[in-house]
Length: 46
Image (cartoon, rainbow, N blue to C red):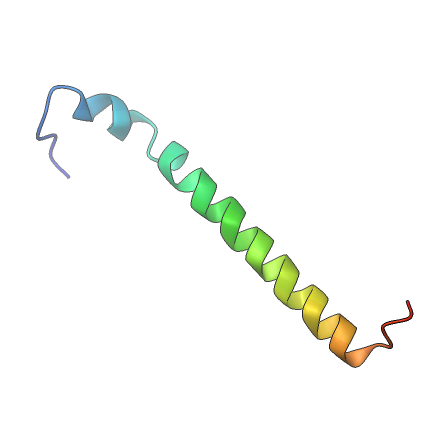
């Protein structure tokens, strides 16, 4: 990916920073999905 603007290079230096939030959100979503599955299989009393 080529830099289009002068400030673009700084973003390209750490591309993981932009996706860190999405990765955390995906991890949270997966955890919620597992929790829902466990609640569905196991009794809700626990």
